Image (cartoon, rainbow, N blue to C red):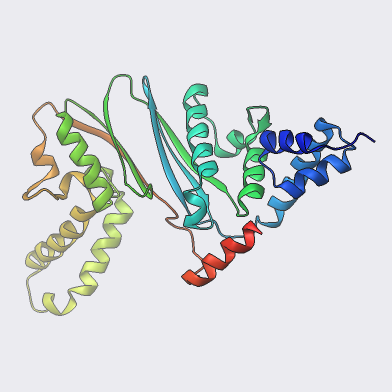
Length: 296
């Protein structure tokens, strides 16, 4: 068996980012063979990641990257905010975003994407390895890639990387488009325009309004009732529709009133970290202790 030196351990740590004791054990198991040691660490990482797979990863960060005529938005999740600001986590999110743009994965599903080879390994294996290194479940939740060759676009990424926005348009003044991206981040619209609202959503809001206004509608003519109900429904929907929203920087105007005759908003997307994921509630002390244990 080859004698394992400090230099061997140092070299393998630099190559894998694994812990000191794990590296030493891997070299011992592999009898000093570097390739076998790396394979052992990788397999151990996959096993450890599998144990963490049932955990809830509802924290994390949003990544936005644009290059030439493409722009990508991506959500990478972790279990805690501590890991979400870790350099390894941030670097991985940036590298994956770059990879998506370079390989044009616009038409691929997330499942297909996870199975692709990135830097010598499947992306799923990369995520498993990162899970082991950081001691928390890491999850690539979603991404969207846009080709903006014939359009304008603006992006907004909140300072804490928890909310990200891409808005695509034509003939909209640059600063205004930037303001609209911030509007989307702050006001969280669901639809671009009234025509984008599904009929079942309109019908649902109509039923809710009629029920809520039951006492107000009593004794009033049918045409007056319809006006009252429509007014309430329009108010509710206007908060959900970007073009109908009141501009946050000037509440005397709606977004659509800011657009010139030839200007048009084409589409938008808004990501918020963890939205729709049921989070496990932990107090701050427990979260800190969890981080300490993960580092031991």
